Image 1 (cartoon, rainbow, N blue to C red):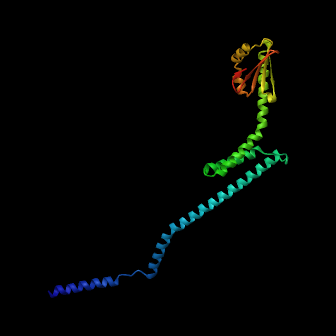
Image 2 (tube, rainbow, N blue to C red; image 1 turned 120 degrees about the vertical axis):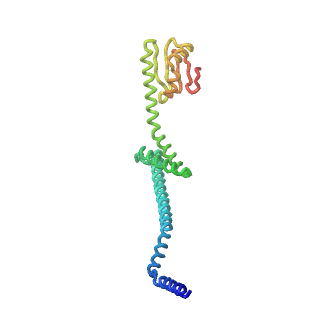
Length: 224
C-alpha cells in the first residue's frame, strides 16, 4: 500500500510539473490574434460601404448625364422653333435630332418610369418628321407625275391622254373622247387604277371626255 501511495504521489507531481512547465502564449501574440480577427470581421462592412458609395456615385453621374441630355435637347428644339419662325437662319441638323432621340430612347428603355425621357424623345422624333416633310412631299409628287407619264405612254395608242393636276399633283386625269362612266369603271378595274392611286397617295382620279367627267374618290373608294 505504501508503495502504491508513493507511486500516485510521484505521478501527480509529474503531471503538475508538466502543466506548470508548458509554454504560455505570449500576450503580444494574443493581442495580434484578436486584432486579426477584428480586421477580418470588418472587411465585409468596408466592402458594403464601398459598394454603397459606388452605387450612389453612379446614380449621381447618371442623373448629371441625363440633365445634360435634356439641356442639349431643349437648346436644339429652341433653335428649330426659332428657325421655323424665321427668327434664325442657323442650319438645323437632322442627324442631331436623330442622335438625341436615340440617346433619350435608351434612357427611357433603361428606366420605364422616366416619362421625361420618353416625352423628349418623342419631341425629337416629331421635329425629324417636320424636317423631312417637304422632301417627302416633293418625292411623292414626283412619283405621281412619273406614274401619269408612264400611263400616257402605255395608253397613247388608245387615244388616251393622262396627266396630273392639282396641288402637289394630287389628281390624275384620264382624258378620252370616248370616255363614259362604264368605260371609266372598266378601265379602273383592268388597269388596277384604284390600287395604284392609293399607293401613290392620289386624292382623286378623274375620267373625262371633254364634255363630262367622273371622279373616283380614292379615300372613299367610290366613283361619282
